[in-house]
Image (cartoon, rainbow, N blue to C red; front, side, top):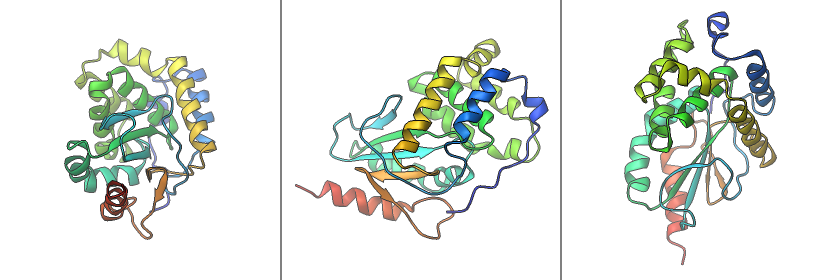
Length: 225
């Protein structure tokens, strides 16, 4: 995995998205997890989990800790998500759980996660994946507000609804709580993958754990009696 390099973005232009209170709360979460590499422990079902595939209690559960502003997470999605989903999620061989970890620039990550949740469970992953795939828009000098609102609009949210979602104090507090839970579980960065609680690491990879390593762990668990 590659160490996280915080991209430059026009904070002044983005400042109108978050209230000062919301922004400070988001920055509190940043103190918990500020990198975009590494891994750690993962427990059982947690408050706020978003999942696809097999139902809770499945023989194999794959947990991913990730951020919509993490470039390594975006690389994993680009390289591996489609095949992983086809092989394991669409076939209900595993329960795939996504857990939110806001990484720098934290206000953008928090806003993105808020919009994804406001879009509803049926559109949550579409929004998350869209945000990851468009990181280059604001990393290269664009206004992240434009990207956030365009993706939110595409998910059926009005501008007023998006603004309300981004600044919702209860939602921000929930993100902080999830980040704290991840910290207590030993998670130190993103993307972090766990198969039935066991961390999967591919040394030297620049896009998180390889699909081959994740698949080997999944198949080993599926083969157990």
